[in-house]
Image 1 (tube, rainbow, N blue to C red):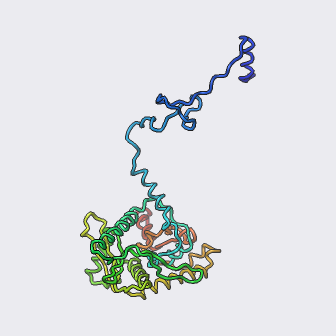
Image 2 (tube, rainbow, N blue to C red):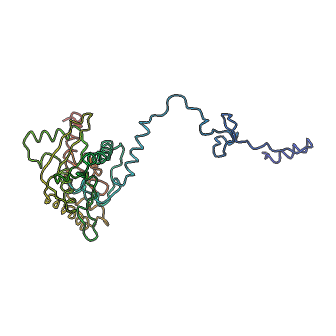
Image 3 (tube, rainbow, N blue to C red):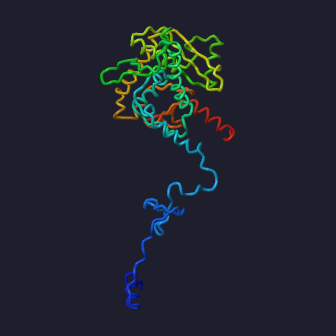
Length: 335
């Protein structure tokens, strides 16, 4: 038989002739014995009332936790929170992709592959772009006049009824030469491709990626709509190495038809999503043509290698996936 505490206290009181007083509640106190009152929310042990003031708690043994390790997830979360990561309207930098399937998925808001690594190269590129805006302002100040326009808000196309237009921010525009300048912060691969294509005598249109080239001409159209005389487009490939002189550039005459073709393709993609009724039947997005390529698929946020194409993702370059599996299986399976 069990006896509760109240009954036990009554028995003791009757035997001793004096009432039993309950023990006082533990007083909140700092384990560092600093003498300052401890707020109740800082108590760690309710039974004793003990806890630590901020600043009184001793440093744990050993070095502090790795900042590199902690920063890794912070960078991932920061990138995912940026408006550019969450937008569904396409800008000039996205209209030049060879893959219409990728464009359609961005427009439709299809699920993206989870970000598990910091997007470190784009992060650096964003930082360089921000600093180049300051450099251009300094350049104008040195000249004592406005030769350069930086980070200009451009309306590339006003849009159609119920379809958003195309807007973007031009990196820089050289008023002296009527030239669009787009900064690209690149590694050795992009620089080597440009120089190799140039050495082989390839035409300018084949020396850089279509994404970069079309983006530059779209910016040109945006400046033209503002009444500016646009004569050239230029990509300035700033080297990611320690040496500025590793940088290079690509230039060609401005051609508005290149921009108009990209705009027509954008609206055709919007119409295709409507015709397929992707809003009601998301899996029908698989009906949008895809242009699989190793370079395009590698960085595509919708690529799901080895899985069927549907709303959840695109199979991507299936031929490349098959070759990869063949190499993996080679020698593992007996002929």
